[in-house]
Length: 331
Image (cartoon, rainbow, N blue to C red; front, side, top):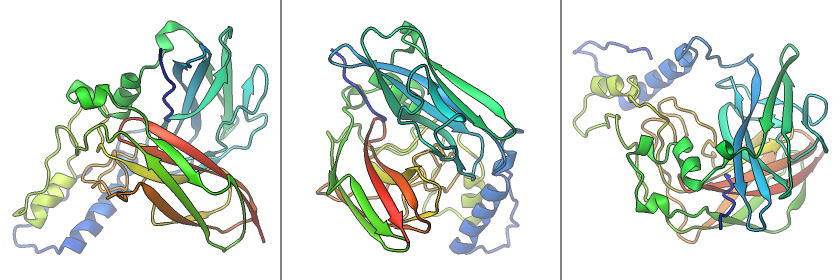
């Protein structure tokens, strides 16, 4: 019986005589990765681009019903997009609101949410998004056998198995983390008033933590600034997405349009593959240490009034567990 698994460069030459401080190196790398992120491919842009929904596949629930998993691709590397539920962000047939996001983070976001359908569901469930110059994009969800998702499939697509090189026992037996929210699921705060959120994470300590599995030249203790720069500006060669594996927890805006500040800075939940970004998919990123008791505390401040849905995601490096909080922000 199956379970539901939620998921939830350009090179710069430096002369031999140049002396770069470590701070200078980091600033230089940031300059290159930021200014050249649009050069990663002809279709890469920081802002001004569109949005596409994606049907990831389905999982079978213990009662023989199904959960269809959807994600999306925001073609921008920096700009976050907002599309309210309505004609431009809707499902059909049936209810237009199926719990889909209205705030879209940059780039590829996999298995962002699930839609439950009964065991006798037939046909297609269609998610429609319209963004930009009236461009309509649709994702078609069905229960065709080719779309069934096993945990290993989810982990493979997320980069956990590193193209099959890390498909070991700890990966094969991995269970998704669970997240318990401390306090009510609904909160009310004022603009500028910090909101304290606390969650407890439960996990099986799998898969085993690791850095990039292959193709990445790590810094050595005796590397010169020039050697570190050369390594940083040469992305790893790999046929599939790769990632750092280990537990992280992050809050992000799922619905709501105002600016939101998080303290501490949250690890990105989207696939930012640029070097030195705060992302498990970024070369040279280091896994932060999690509290031994599994309790994570975050301070969140809203800059504009409105109703927000914040989603907290525990990611063990392969599978995910989510929790939501609805926040009403007043003046």
